[in-house]
Amino acid sequence: MARLLFEDGREATADDLTTLAAAFGIIVERRDVPAALAPLLERELLDDEATRDVLAALPPRPDFPSRDLIVLHPSRKDNEQLASKFEGWHRHPGDEIRHILDGQGIFGVIVDGRRADLFVGRGDFVVVPAGLEHNFRLTESRRIKAVRYLSDASGWVAEFTGRAA
Image 1 (cartoon, rainbow, N blue to C red):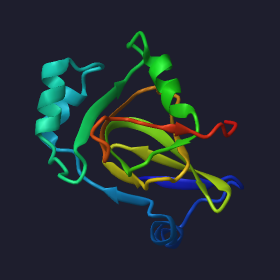
Image 2 (cartoon, helix red, strand yellow):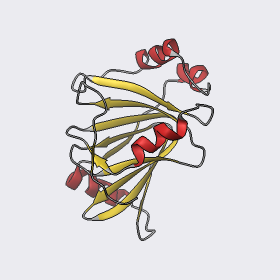
Image 3 (cartoon, rainbow, N blue to C red):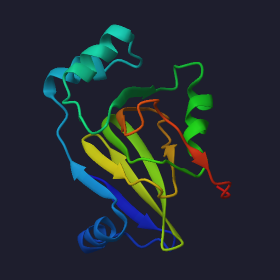
């Protein structure tokens, strides 16, 4: 289950998460990962066929025409290069949605001028609303498999803000 930690070390309560959702549009839900995907998700990396199979097992979202599967793992030669692409503080012109299928990560978000870290793992479904400054970092395991749903059909488009990490 996702956990949200504020800069001061305080962990968000269920009421805090409800307030964040209402005020900023951040949504965190629990969505099961289909058990039939387990053999595919146990693999370190996925080829094109396996990627298609994973996406076919999950419902599309008609209001989000672009979706892909991001697979990061230490055995991937470009893992750190790809991971660093998401670490810079940025925002999107449309909502960004991720369904975490395997592994773990951290969404950093800026709310009311304060930084908070949303720790996500398997089964977490997160909506980061358009315009909300955020970043995404891997945990120590350096691996994650997540479906990204984006409202921009051209794919992942970010406006980097230059905020210091």
